[in-house]
Structure formats: structure tokens, C-alpha cells
Image 1: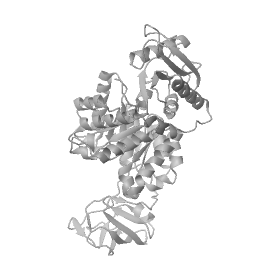
Image 2: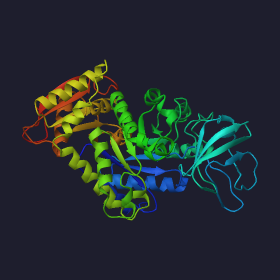
Image 3: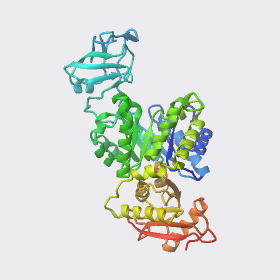
Image 4: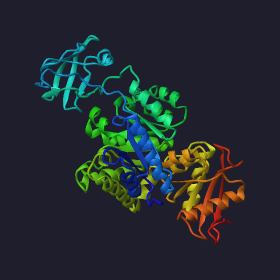
Length: 479
């Protein structure tokens, strides 16, 4: 299955898309990687979805990535005697550690870490920012606040803390149990960590995972932006989680932050996914708004590796149409005459490593000579990532003997992954690359390709060779 676009599509599975037949339709419509939201999926459901995705993968013959998205700490207020109370801007309202029903003057906050961390002047945003409070007095047991904006609060509403750095990590007891269940399947490729605040939040997950899955940091808190370079360095990929980010940051700041994060990831060669409300109206409508089309287009023009559907594919009325629409928008943008220039203008300088120098040379040669494809032999996936970092105009074919590597690369920009045995010698390397390029529809007899690999063959992390080859007249050999 050959995709006519370079940006990848990540589709969330849910009640509208959990059946194997629907997963297959979503894959055929353009989904390259599937997200399982552990906020809603039990361990049994997660395992069932993984099995169904792998069944679809086996029939399609294409590697499919799976992302398990951990819930992270969900901070909520307690309950009220009357379920909902009315408040007035300017009045005093207290959050405390008393486990009794609340009223219009106070409510229970079952999170001692918040009571201990909030300082006078900090903001507390309730119910996705519909109610805004400012802390006036804090003693570790209660927070006396002033209502800044909003008129009501009700049972179990979420709490956001844009000004407060919490002392607890991003991994909860539920997340640890979910992570253990995900790793036990040995069939999930990526794990997303929610509400990352600092580089230290990634350490525990890395220790547990031990390289068995890629670690994706979801950026949805302003504290993460203050140490974003360190977080990117310790992550395998980044997700721009615009939903919660738009609650904790001014809405008008989110587009600039999105650009900042995409460009930072492109410089470092780490995949970056843009997520949340991309085609939100398609939850209930068969067509998106013009603004949503522009929103998706901007992410593609910026060079994001992947764009994500959440409720649109998980619980919406038009999951297949949503994926098809996103694929159509992406393909159209990539055919736009301005697209290569915009992508080129944001291209990062290569790092002073052999792999980067090889990847830069491969891209320049391929574009100068108008070659049909860049072929990368990669065991760990690093060579593929460096090739993608260059954002070449020609297709990138990643050949790997390891199915897990091919699946993990399914989220990476421009990457067409094929699982194949390692080449036995240089002749086999050339013949195998030419044969696969022709078979996959990226070239024909007489076309030229460029191959990057490491010598000795099969040595991970040793990319040190480039070879230009012609596809033979039989489409099976190289010259």
C-alpha cells in the first residue's frame, strides 16, 4: 500500500472504531498509526485492539504503528451537596483537605500535592478554564482564592495549574499498571506520557520500558516549555497536545508554541505529532469547517511528522471520512508549489556526525540528479530518522530486518517502511534495494536510486556509505 503523501496520520480508536473491519477501513483510508487512549481503555480492551490491528497489518502487508496514550495525573475537585453551585467574580472560594460535600464557599480538593505547591498569586483553572481562581492565602491544608472569572462549579471538575510546578511525577499508579500491561503485549510501539513538566518525569518510564517502546512526551503544560530542549533530548518523539495546552496557556499563544515545538523537533531529528481538535466538527458533520482545513494545512506546511485525529475517529459519526479528509488535505498541501520552498526554508543544519553528513549528501544527490528514491538500510531506525530530518523531495524507503523498527518508523515523515532480510553483500544490497523500489511502485527499470547503508553490513549505527544504482531492465536487479 503506497501512500502519496509524506506526513503521517494517527487515528484514535474508540467506540466508533474498535471493530476489526472499521480499523481496516481506517487504515485503507490513510491511517498509518493507531492510538489507544488508556484513559478509557481497559487492559482487556487494549489487548483486543492490539490483536485486531495486527490482524489488519498481516492482511495489508504494511507495518502499522500502535501508540498507547497513558492518562497521567487527573486533578479534580470533590463533590458538592447540591451537585452544582453558583459563584460570583470577586467572591472568596476555598479549596481544602476536608472530605465533606462542598458549597458556594468551599470544596474538597483530594490532592495534597496541590495544597502544598500552590503559592499566593498562582492561578487555578477549573473545568477547562471556565472558572478561574487566584490564590490569596495558602497554608498547605487549604487554598483561599478569589474568583476571577466564571460563575459556577460542579462535581469532579478538572483542575489546571498553569503557574504551579507540582512535586509529583507524571506517572500515576494507574499509569504504572497500564504501562506494565502495554509492555506485556510486546506489540505496542510507542507510549505517550501525559502532563510532562520536567525532564525528570521521563526517567521512571525509561527505566521501566528499557527501550521496548518509543517514549513520546505530550507537551500540554507551560512548565514543560521552560525546559523543552532537555525534554526533547530525553524523548523519542513529541506530541503537541493542544487541548490542555490551550487551557493552561492563552489560546492565542498556542499557534506560536506549535511552530516552536515543530521546529525544535525538526532540528533534533525527533518525530513531532500535532494533535487535538484538528477536524473537530467532523465528530458530527461529514465535512470540516474551512478553518479546520487551514489548521491541518499549517501543520503540514510546517513539516510536522504526523497529524492526529482524536474524537473524530474514536467516537464520531464519520471516522472513515475524517481520515480520508485529513489524507486529502495533506496530499493537496504537499502538491502545492509553495510547499517545497517552505519546507526547505525551515531545514535545520546537519549535526557534526557521520550519519548526518551521509543523510545530507543523500538528499542533495537525490534532488540534484532527480533520483526516484532514497533507500536506507536501518536496524535501529536511526538512519531512517536522519534521512527524514532532511525532508527530501524524493521518497524515503526504509529497509529493516526488524519488524519493530519498521512499525516505530510508521510515525516518521516521508518514511515508507519495508521489512526485509539484511543484505549479505554489496551486490545483494543493491539488487534488493532496486527490486523493492520497483515492487513498491516508487521506480521502474532504468530509474536511478541512492542507497545509504553501513559497512560492514548489518552493523547498527554505522551508516557510512552511499551508492547510486540503476534499476535493471528486469526490475529485479541493480546496476
